[in-house]
Length: 198
Image 1: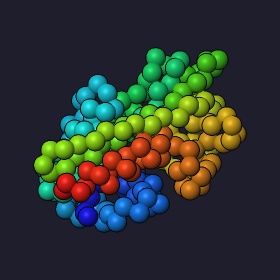
Image 2: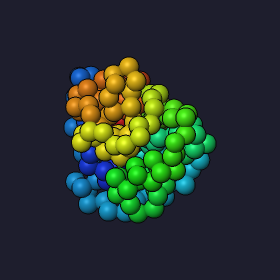
Image 3: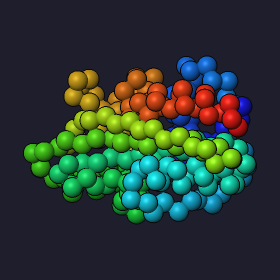
Image 4: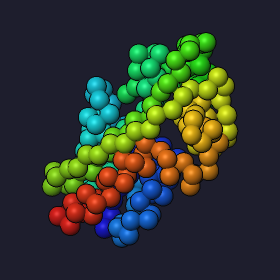
């Protein structure tokens, strides 16, 4: 079965493929590059779930294949839940490193450094059937970036029980803990069931 990952983010697409490797789903994964999809869907929803569904439906429309999308982000308690659903666009057209520095500057010396990563994952079939799952992980924001792995806010998100940021974990280690991995675990059986209708 062919499924397209609805993302232009190569790091995210690669991570999603790895997450489903162990579920024996017999899926051939494709990305936007295969179909030369260069346009982006409009992400103006108020929730991660709505954005994930919108992105998956957009991918179905442009490829004709079942599509899997996720929308994820970081919610920082002391910033009132920001950057939230606007995580990627929160600081405008900037690099990951610049976004991390802006967040650390905004947070300053706040005592409450609690945060959570949230992921909503959506599968949409060309016939219109869909499934939604979610996952999250709680942690703390560090005072400075740590580690060279991962992407996005990974280097400043600390998992206290590990004493390490996502940026310090290998891809395999991150996939054992991440919000995206938890959403994928919930999605795997639904993916297998729904694709039988495709």
